[in-house]
Length: 246
Image (cartoon, rainbow, N blue to C red):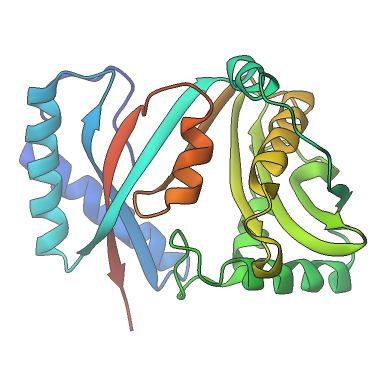
């Protein structure tokens, strides 16, 4: 559930409550035990007053249903061509070779999930409750996204798996996102994140992407530095709320 782009005003309380309850019910019917909701507290395309009023209504509804705030996220949106141009201004020494994961091979998927799980250790943008294989399966089951081999890739440094890259591109509207970029702990601090981002952007362009849209936890200083390096100011700031069912 999200606000329509450029939507104005505040919805009726009963309609808003019904939409929240319907969203929770749909998640639970699908077997979810952890449900996220994001409260927009700043948006570059909407005036400040309705954003604040909507945020207050959203918080009240979530609190009444048992959600708890987990932190803030920062969101970026810009032309994929602009993002590629910003990265092209910096020289990147290639240290990684890339191989798509064979999504029809259960053993290859299991290895990718193990690498994703390891890359998420110590990552401030990761939640221990999230299942690594479930994250990959959700990406693969997104039928609106481009069904290309580049969706799940592993970057190798001298033959050793160093980076996990998950990409989502929706060809209908050109929306593109690096769903996850994770560097293995032993390879951190070598500039591989920027190299992997550049590779991901080039792949998404080839997959039909036109608009790059991504977000990260406010506490994730490494990811924020990468995104800030694309030269575009943040598009939105959001609070992330979570409902956990036991």
